Length: 431
Image (cartoon, rainbow, N blue to C red; front, side, top):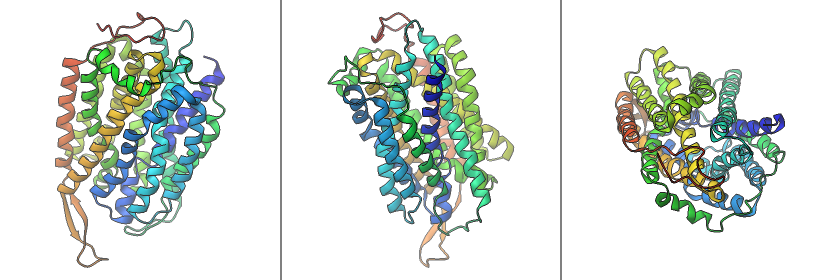
């Protein structure tokens, strides 16, 4: 790859995931501390993004598959995200936050699949094997994880510099201000990317043809079903880990940087472990190992001590994310015909980041409330606010479910053949 192209694609990934990672690891704790938000309310806020992933990915996929250069769409969407994130930082109610979260999410959700398709488009150079393309994608995708880490360090630095905010006292959400900054920079970088035009052979029915993969590729339906279940349990980490870590003994302002342990492990996994695992173990074993990393972490969360072990266990999130989600993206790109790859990535986004994560946020929020003891609100007589949480019971549920998903992947997933199909064609013949 030319160095300029590598830098631009890496910057795209860096800023996309930095704008997301600026708020996702910590907003649940901020809302709990400043608005006394319940688990159900926090789940509703986080669930907006996943609802948007149900509604918008195919719209974005259709635009870039047929009508609009991908980098133009990314630039416009990122500018909208920057504005919406800044407006969210000023909201003093859950309702106002959810309203602007809708604007941010509708613009952001399609970019998760489109940034992947941009990268794969420019990696599909003549003479490069699928293994080389997968290796290059894993390295470039690592820049997104670095962006998430940088966002965590910057946020912790800022939080420790400003005066402390007392529990129950509102202040602008610093994480959303940081997300706005990253979104604005990405809007500029997007227009510097090399042109990624709509395919000359773009299928006008790409939206619906993506569903043909269920019939065209043996085992694809089972793969999507298991991926859906896995993604529901993913939200127990995103939504609940920040308040859990504070209850376990991590100072609130240091939660963002503490959670970067997950992304540091993800870097090692993406840059080193994932390419090795795909080469020597194949996709099935890679997926199984990735899914098993999550219940191991959840069971340690259920123990809740010692604190050093809880913090170390955050690394299993990074391993699981790289081995499961990035492998899934590579798998979908391999089995989808060239003219519907963006829409195929949108289908994966719909099933996992859409339905799976949305149901996961609702499920984990309500489960947290079920195992929470509510206490009287000293500022509002007659009302109650969340008190002590039985974290052990909360995390046993996703632990058991992810073990079952790992077993299901082992028994049902079928490896796609490599380097056997003509360029741009799907590979329905499975080993």
